[in-house]
Structures are given as C-alpha cells and as structure tokens.
Length: 108
Length: 413
Image 1 (cartoon, one colour):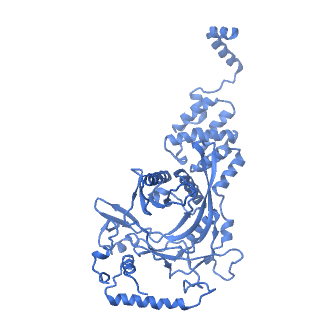
Image 2 (image 1 turned 45 degrees about the vertical axis):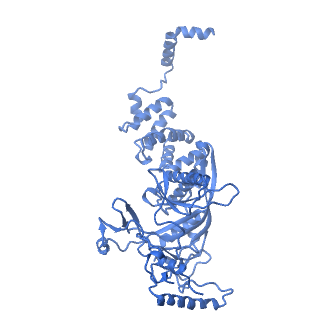
C-alpha cells in the first residue's frame, strides 16, 4: 500500500521533515514495509512490550538541587535576547500549504 | 530522570482523591512545536498514568446562603506525571514572544476531571477544595496567581438527554474567581452561538480577564496530532505496597503506597468534621474557618485562652473579626488584633464586666492597633458595666423622673 500525498504532507507539517526527492519518499515507503513485518507475528496472549528497559527499575532521584546558576552560559546560545529571556517569533511560523511550497509532493 | 518527591506527591494526591494507584505506570512523548518547548516533545503519561478513577467532594452554598450547603462530587479520571514547558510572555507591541526556560522540565501533576460540573460556581468550588487538599498534603502550595496551580477549563453545552456537545478548552485562567467567570462566559457564548444557528469549533480559547471574555488562541486551532510514543529513556515506574515490598532493594528507590497512605494528614473534609464535633459549631462555620488561611488556628487559639464557649466565640470570629479583615483586605496573619487580645476582650464580656455593645466598641478601638489592652480601652472610655445595685437604681430613677409623662402614660395604659 502506497503512502498517500495527504499523509506525506501531514508528516511534513508535523515533523518539519522534507522528503526532498522521490528517493526520500521511497525510503519511507521501504521503512514502513520493513516495520509491517511485525504484523506477521502471532501475538495472541502476549503482553505488548513498549520498552526494552521493561525489566529495569526507573531510577528515582532525590529532591536535591545539584546544579544551576548557569544563566550566562545558557544565554550564550541565544541569537536574540531581552534581559534574561530568549526571544522568539510571536507564534509558530507555519509550514506553507502544499500548493504554496516547493516540495516533491506537488508533482506526485 | 524522575524526581522521587514528584512520585510521592502524586501518590499522596491520588490517595487523597480516592484513586486507584497504578503500581506500574508508563511514560510517553507528546510531540508538538512551540518556542517554550525546546526539545519539541513533552514527557507525559498518556497511556497508563500513575492514578485513575477517583473522586473529589466539595460543598456549595445554595442561593448564596451560607446556611444551605449541598455536597457535590466530581469524578477524577486520572492523575498523570509530566514535564513542564517553559513560560511564554507575549509581547504583541514588538511582535515577539519572550521565553523563560527556568521551569522547563520541572515535574507537574495533571489532574483530569470528568465533566460532572455544570456552571462556573461548581467549577470554582471544586477547584477551591482541590486547592485546600493540595495545600494540606503539601503536594503544592497551589497559588494560582503564581502558576503553582493552573486550570484549563473544558466547556461544552447540550440539551438534556442529548449527547455532549463539541467542547472548547479555555486557558489563561489565573484565579478561582476568573475560573467561574470564564466558564460562565463560555457557556453563554456557546449557547448564543448555537441558538443563532452557528457551530462550536473544537478549539482552544484564552480567557481575557480585562474584558471578561474568551478569545480564540493562536496556533492551537484544529485537532493536534501529537504522535504519542513510549518514552525510550524511562523504564516503567513501579510502586510497591506492604505486600509487594522487595526484600533487597535500596530504600531510596522504593515508594511504598501503604506507607504513604498511613502518613496522609487529615483532609479538609475531615478537619471540618472534627471542628464541628469538638467545638459544637455549624458545618458552614467550619467551612469558612478552613477557607481563610490561618483562621482555624486563630479561632482555636482564642478558644484556648477564654472561658467563653466556642459556639459564642465563633460568632465574634466570623462576624466581627473576619468582616474587619475583609473590609481592609487583610489576611489573618496581618490582623492588628491578635488571638490573645480578642480572648482578653471576650473574657471581659464573659465575666459580665462589659456589655456586648461595649465589646464591639472596644474591638473597633483594638483594630486601630495602638497597643492598648482591652481593659485599658474599657477604662478609658468608661465602658464598664455598673455592678453596683444602688447606683443602677439611682440612674433608673433619674431616667424615670425625667420621663415622668411617658411613665404615667405607660402605667395607665
């Protein structure tokens, strides 16, 4: 089953990936096929595993403050700052709609 | 890495809200883009949270009369642990958003309620009770103005008997009072919209406290696809009880639900019942006592220091002291009249050295906070009740003499 343009467009919006060219889309298609092999396994009566760490203990940290006071170091990364705030645009800059952007998906 | 205190707080709160605690709970990633979420995802518990299926009981006054209170219940769907994002400050004039990442990654507890409330008043009362519970447990200081307790209200309307309508989520509510206003406004807005033939969008709206209305929020239109997936870095969270306690594990790593249960302090509802039983006051009195920070303690201190019966003391606390405090917008801690002074005054009244009217006058003087004792004020203003029988007779006689005509009329008729 082929991945539809709508799904690809949706993915580009959600993850801000750019499938770039037909090869990129094909790679995604192959990855889905590879993962689909999981469906061939009979899992009747088997509890799903959602983490390979499932028999490990989740480490609980004590409520102790061990680091901090590194404002200057953290703000060094900021392109723009105001007092001690990072500056960002007023809202998310949305990915333009399919018709309005340059993407391989247009010609599909 | 998960902070142990967060887990304990969540278990305490879950137990206080009658939830089932999940001995095994899981963490997930919720993906979305926003300037205050640098990682691009938030760690939360979407599939299996730490606590589920609880309830919260709260009281409501009917028709604003304190004497008629009803108890209502709202079901708690679940409590989940999650990460906080940073804080965004919107600077519309310069068309930018300022981001403060100090709180990003800090543990949060999200309490999800079922839609069992039907108006702003109910929502406000439920949240107020939750606030008191959280403060009693020590899970949170729950001050809304400081963002320690945040409330997002989901509102929908429907005709009785029909399925629930489309809901909107209202954010940016900064106080319990505003919660009631925001909910009531949104209910009204939705009704008007539907009655004029419109439809309700499943959107997120912000409450504007200055205008008292809700407005659509930018960037949160339409249903979001968060692409939930298990958090790969966090194994399941396992909690234990007395039965399942592992023998060889490091104590610091073990959270014992039964132990936490044993150590739960008295919840507000229990405290109120105890006050009613111990002091013979009415339920609505205990409600007010718990509702004002420090008032219960003040009341109990006065009771300890006076011979006056608690049932009488409560009147002075709720009618006189509290109204003074409210008039001057003071907290109990800021009261110029201490429990010691009030007890002193009430003792004078109890020993019949002054009248009730005089006591109120003395209280007004005490309120000025000039450092005088009740006895000093009484002497200053000559408010002592005259105990001398003869003196009383003389005064009465003088009054009668002065009102001779009235007296004759009375005797005759």
